[in-house]
Length: 623
Image (cartoon, rainbow, N blue to C red; front, side, top):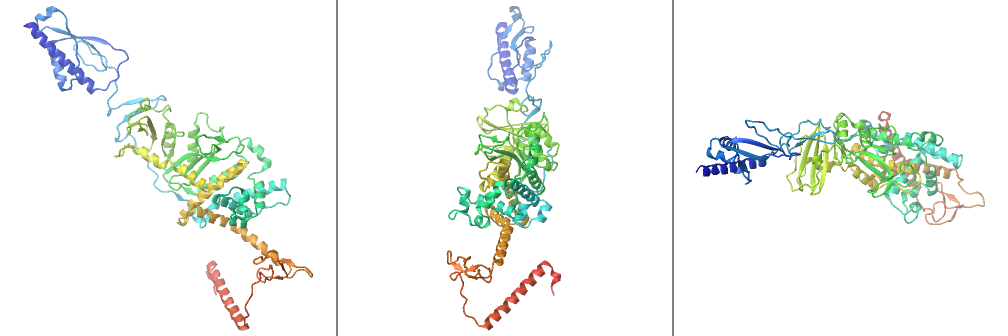
């Protein structure tokens, strides 16, 4: 009987111990220890039953078997003194007995507790639940939208004034000076180009971008030519200016090029960038990215990027306002910069230089995985600027547990560190996107099928600033084939200046205008002064010619409205051109009274126009 009773007790103990270990395994997330340890614990039957029944819920059992062994046959005679010997493997859990306390190995806590992880660079990350507020407070965000500065608002009332905010008259004077110098040294000592003619040259460059033709010659052809281009400047004169176009002093360039690879145009380019910075206050979001201006000119900093539509070109780092696509700051990439500190990454140096005029205001900068890093986020936060961008998973600051690629689709994992958050979102089963943000104190997911986090949604909205700007510039670009890289940079500068001028003109005047219409009217305004001067010179030349040809000679018709090359002997009384009989306008027979009335009405109209102009210029001058 006692043997049967002992077996029944042993069965009960075995069952409860199975319940006990099943409950522990189901309720604790643990990491297996590096080396298993065996331990023997001796308990009386009553002690074992009391301990198990007080801590175990039988409903949690998964049916595991535990081996129980009695110490000896002699103990079967007395249940009260029976001892049971447990042989089991220690998991990373422990409980105390009367004899000794088992060591407690390091364990990983469940989600919702303080779980930390150290990355390769020493950054301590803490895994967070989605939807919980993180233990840091973001900086106060910049509240205003992008707008022109007060100086720009006062000076802009036309398209030409808006364009001259970026390509100023001082810059045009410099280009005029160095172009004339080069032409006089290489072609003719009396070669000259007036400032209005240089502006007309730029107008033709802009018009060539609006109407694409196979070659330069076709711009002046009868079939494919643009009437505005034909009437502005002869083709030979345009090619002559293009041949001698220069942007710096050729005699001192070699000395300056030793320390400045951009010496051939750096002076003009620096003025342009300064004007871009001082003419507009960007809004909250600024996008930083690269632009590859297509070119195959021979220069030491030409880049090849296989992922771009045009593989070869000159690379520029661009900071662009998200809403207006205004180009806030731009830097050319000239290769290794000796002035950059040795321990500083190129990406961090570029972002800090581009954002320098706009720091300390609470703005946010959006970057891609080339620029984004945790150290850059800390630098920007020290200047009251946040960052939002994708980050490459191979960076040392990324925690190891976040690098798993085989995730369930549309799942999100959130980590936090000092004033920054890392979001790992599985857009596809084996494609994970990593977003680093210093502007979000809470990561929430959308109530949709994709369950996108708010960091992903905001990044998709703000990442496109530079790409859209580059697309707008390429639509009507003035770029054309050239063998000189300063001219290629000048083309890019004209494109950027025209885009910024369009943004400023709409913001200052309140008029909404298509980009193509703005560029067309801008070209007309640029060429207007040259066209007026050209017309005045032509009229003066006609006035100086004799009223009738020399005796015995006949002049050629200068009107050619109804004729081709007829001879003429009489000048027009209004335009002073020699006019043949076919091109003369017949006037009906009129009496003297009609002519007198016509002259009196003409005088009255002329006086009213003069009074109106005087009142507009100076109201106190009225009689």
